[in-house]
Image 1 (cartoon, rainbow over the protein chains, first blue to last red):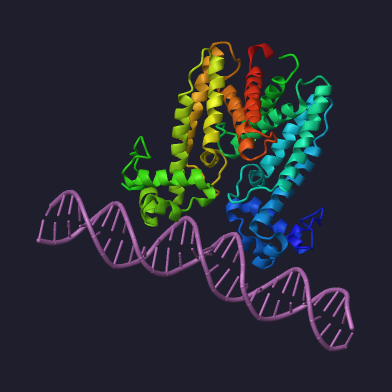
Image 2: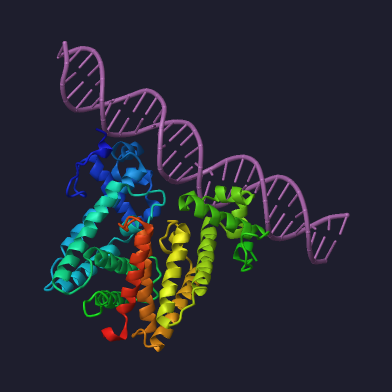
Length: 208
Length: 208
DNA sequence: CCACCGACGTAACAGTGTTACATCTAGGAG
DNA sequence: CTCCTAGATGTAACACTGTTACGTCGGTGG
């Protein structure tokens, strides 16, 4: 079996000793520090301490490497959302999810752009990679189901979850694109908080 | 004055005879038909019937060309939104704006991605270009002000407009990224319509 | 008439993703 | 033990990218 199709992965990529994890960690590091434009096969190989062919033997090429970044991003992103499950009520849980979503995205802006904004132009996620994204989305669906069961929201959970996702992603996407006209970060954070509450209010049972 | 800093522009780029407009039209055509990855200086020059240096004399390089695409996109986008000002009430006007927004974005997906999703990794819009984007946003602010005056929405118009923008952009951005899990386009269109109404409901005076 | 300046094309530069090919190492077969 | 096969690796080359130096052409002002 070709190594770049192997499903073996180490939990802690940064401390991994196998070449695949070392290359992936180097790629994510470069993506974080220098952006998607600097993510070249040669720079990744140099940072990982191997030759350019290493990227091809372990990932099948740059597309495969970006796909690994994509999947790894959703894995970490999902874990960050999972850790935010604290909340007294279902609605507070949803608000906490929104905050955790924004925190992760703003802490990993370039990674988020690769996952959601095609920051690497020639990469299109495969069906398998999109399935990973769907698994993350399912967390939001489950939380929404709980909110509907709690009578905090009314509607079809899938539709509600997508609606909330779109709203949250919209705020963050505009912010990352430099389209948010507010001057400082605290204003944007507060606007996001208010917007999320407004979003939830639009899905509240009383409205319909 | 260097030609690539000239503000002279023809209204109809496609039928223009001056080299600058011809190159810009060729670039937008390639962007539309082959995507941001195929937008190379050589391919644009070949399509425009000139040499690669033409792009440098008229736009100062690829960044300048992409900036022109960015600005031209917001110009056309703003016109499309402006043409959607029909609506009996202020709230229907806002809904029509949302529909026109989605229609333009889905008709010009790659162009939209350049404007909102950094589809060209190494390009960052200048302050002048962002001012053009802001002018488009102002249309939404004006429509929101009218809705507030009509008592259709309650809140600070700028905050409301940004909230609506984020929601609309979120739906479209996820759809363009292939993250919308609905199978066919009509389902997505209906979900967008419902979501927009929900969005407006969350800003209605009755809620607060 | 002519000198100048801007637009243009050719060719080269460094850097990109990718691949052919030789080398080397690990592990099993006899 | 030897042999030898398969896979990982590195070097070098390929076509392509954005960019720029340089020579040339054409129109304009003196």
